[in-house]
Image 1 (cartoon, rainbow over the protein chains, first blue to last red):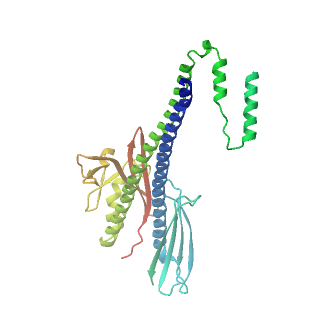
Image 2 (image 1 turned 90 degrees about the vertical axis):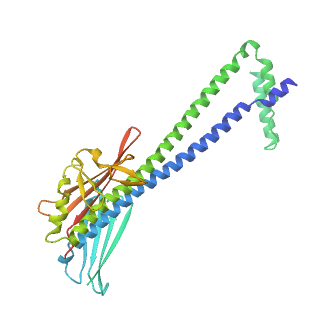
Image 3 (image 1 turned 180 degrees about the vertical axis):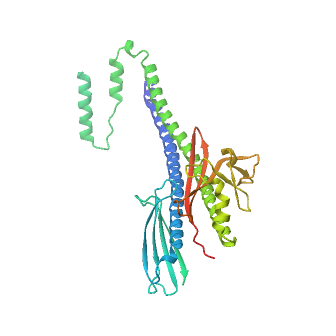
Amino acid sequence: MMIKNLQSNRGFVMLFAVTLSAILLTIAIGVANIAFREVKFSTNARDTNDAFFAADTGAEYALYNYDSLSPDSFTTIPDIVGLGSLGQSCAIVTVDKRISNDPDNDVIISKGYNNCNSKSVQRELQVKIPR
Amino acid sequence: MEKILKFLFRKSNKLNQGGFTQLVDFGDAISSRTKSASPKFTTGFTLVEVLVAISIFTVSLIGIMSVLASGIANTNYAKQKMIATYLAQEGIEYIRNMRDTAVLYGNGNPWEGSFKAQLSSCNDPDEDNNPCGLDEPPFGVTVCTNPSDCRLYLDNGNYSTTVSVVDSGFIRKIWMVPIGAGNTDEVKIFSRVEWTQGSGGYNVTFSENLFNWIEI
């Protein structure tokens, strides 16, 4: 009878340890997952700003050179590189002065990228200038 | 040896015959092992077993706990980084506002005389050796003679440059780099927010080029 009782309790410590480990592991993975996502989110916020400021610089550059571009023409400004704090951002800008495109406005489209090579994050600005 | 072979054979037989529904009965094997092992050998064996088990369990717990700790630290880092991102963005937009205000409302040559003159003290082609801090509006900048002058303080939950008791832990530096030798119509603005966390120092830096494109 005694042996029977002992035998039915065999493996309980093992079960207990495995269960506890599993619960703790689940919690740890959950926390690590949330932390990873948050870090990704904050990195994305930084990339967004890099891309936006690159696009803004591109738009300003186009506005600065706006008068020198001939009327009723379409210009693709050579890529503006070396932007951003690390010099990795860039902007691709087009100035559309064609009357056939828009009879009333000239349109500047500036696409900013956080990283010129990977082009993973893009922000685009559109400026309309009444003729 | 014979017994073990017998047991294995019996087990495989049972498995083959029974399929999935029939469970293997370990009762026999355990009792036979207990019977066959000599009492001398079993003495103290449980203690060793327990020690080994505890050590394995401890190692796994340490691993799990370190993952938990680094996860919580990363969450805190992400939070600080988000705040720093917004503060650095604010720095750039503050300078943009200074440019717009100067150029739109200034007289004479406001780009040189008003905007660039205000930033001339933060002119720093190399690095942030000579940074400025932002003033409370009306808009302006002040040179930080040492980095702690650029410190941001908490004021009812807002981040402020006005010196107060509650230090936010962030330092915001603004500086300007003129672009090109002959091109006086372009400047590059840098905005860097620094903070320390744990044993490391971190920063978020943005930059933007501003042009003198507005014609009055």
